[in-house]
Image (cartoon, rainbow, N blue to C red; front, side, top):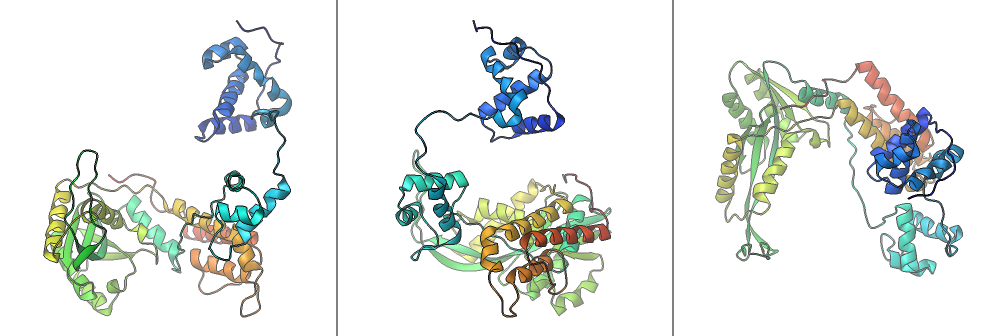
Length: 432
């Protein structure tokens, strides 16, 4: 039986504190000790006694009494308190050179610091450098890529395409059209060894290329069916035949909205001349460097993963037969892809990406401290680049001289343009 403790005064929690505590409980990465103390505080704030909270949470009453630190110290003391032990040997002065070198310098013989090379440069042990990096979430060996669209009508095209996904027009068919070019017919230099119990399938690392083909595909957004056509070359002449095939496949009386990317084969003079022959076709283009907006790319990923990646084809004819058979099997049981993000969600993420780029300390140090050919600070030039890229500003614009000001300017410009054009297109629903 637990010993009786001192009487604990009633507990009151403000709305702000309750929001923080509930946020800790929802977050997956919250430490279990902190989550348990948050539950204790919230239960006690409801007026339950120590013994009742103990029974409800399945913990000892002494554990519930630890909430006595909350009325005096608030949220700051809910975490683990410092425990006695050996004093820290690595001081802040020792940690600072590791952080500065990791962020601002590179070794002479490499593109980034490894834990061992940093340990040799600072005189610390490799485990100490590794612990410092974990504490500050630094991973020089990792890198990510990004691509900012340079389309001056980026916002307009995003709203147009996403609006079609979320709120398709009535009495019309929405098709996502694109080409998967340079599909290689690959044969392994040696026979593939089949899978056995305890042994995966094995194949040689080298291959023999028999040729390539190009798949023209149109994904019907509502049903998931795909209309495909195979050609040996990827030119405007081949693409010009594809609308004719679509015109025959699509039932008469329906308007057809085609979502295309900005490939040159889609905008040649011959294509523009042939479009009047199909007056019910309406073209919608995705922004430059934003093919991820085209849903047919997701279908291409299915084709690659399930058929092409591990396939063995000794000729182009064999490759095309397999693609046609897979396409027929897909259309027997098609599966539509659901688009759930609104245009506002996408534009918010684009703005956040620009924030991360302009707020990066290394990026600012590498660009703000230098001078370009016109003897102007590069930060001003790059702020104009961000505006030109993401808000559709035509030409270069003179921007602020600091990254934070560039952020405010960027967000303000995006919001002004959105208000000028009105609210988001479509509603946040799922396409089935």
